[in-house]
Length: 386
Ligand SMILES: Nc1ncnc2c1ncn2[C@@H]1O[C@H](COP(=O)(O)OP(=O)(O)OP(=O)(O)O)[C@@H](O)[C@H]1O
Ligand SMILES: [Mg+2]
Image 1 (cartoon, rainbow, N blue to C red):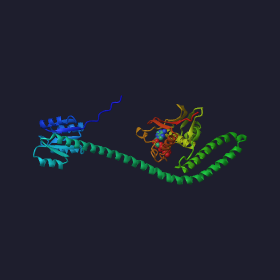
Image 2: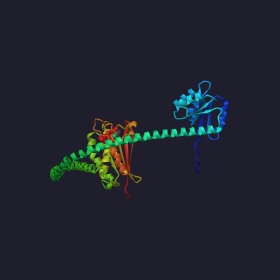
Image 3: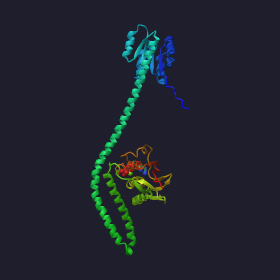
Image 4: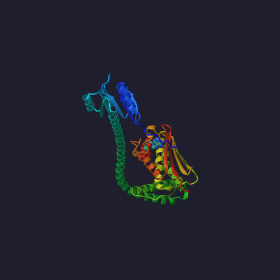
């Protein structure tokens, strides 16, 4: 069963030292409003803070702090609250002064019930509208701020896009040359594989193969950048995520050993297939694994890459025993340009790109870290139906 709550009745606060008008006003308003009363300004101000009334009816002449001073204090606390002054007979001048000081209305004593109800109704409505427009203005301001931030971020990305278009263009020539020479070297090695040079040549061939794979990746990345922004730039295809993880692991193993980091790849024997873009997935994984190696370098620590099936997902974990991420920074690592590697060539785009690629593949990426102990990234990609 669903019980809907009745809307909150509006609240009226009456501040008057005389019991007669105070109580008769309470009786008059009780059927339609939540009524609070105070016999002096001090108690009234306290109730104002506690109850947040929609309208105040306040006597002007009171012992202690009078209504005019009370009005000033109320305005300091809540500039939008309607205040109706209650004035003794013939006190027109004081009533007018109260209006000058920011009261919204005044009513003479003894009051007329119909007129009183009408004035209070009007003022309750005014306060509510004021508060509503204040809240809307606040929301608008927040929305504006958020949009401005997003725009600034987009502009930075757009200017990066322009710069990288030129960079990509300049890079493709030397890369084509490297590619050509890699092919020549591969051929030469193939022919020198006979005789007692055999073992050395086989190892060089493996190394050359890694260079070849990575030069190919660079070429593909360049092509992808050139077609960036075009809708449906590449058509998704079936890719073996286990082989990609394996290749990336092999590709960065040289970097790991040079940095004194132990890199272990534990990959499920059964091939895990996802639908997507192999180049994108490769760069996404490379970013995470390279970060892990960089984090573990100082301690000469360890990086373990795990790839297995879990609940119809390919579950890839990259665990390192590196420097970890501070709690204050963990929420920012996927933002573009966030980096703690200033002066070490960090652009802060690595994880931003990774997240985008994983999102594009309808996957997820999570991070858990303890400062000084290590970090684990978990990437999940939906497996293609078997
Ligand atoms: N495994 C990790 N251990 C500790 N900190 C990490 C790890 N991975 C990422 N970070 C933190 O997240 C930040 C952002 O990573 P991201 O890969 O986006 O950029 P970057 O590595 O600084 O620069 P780039 O990837 O361009 O070289 C890093 O600067 C680092 O502070
Ligand atoms: Mg990085």
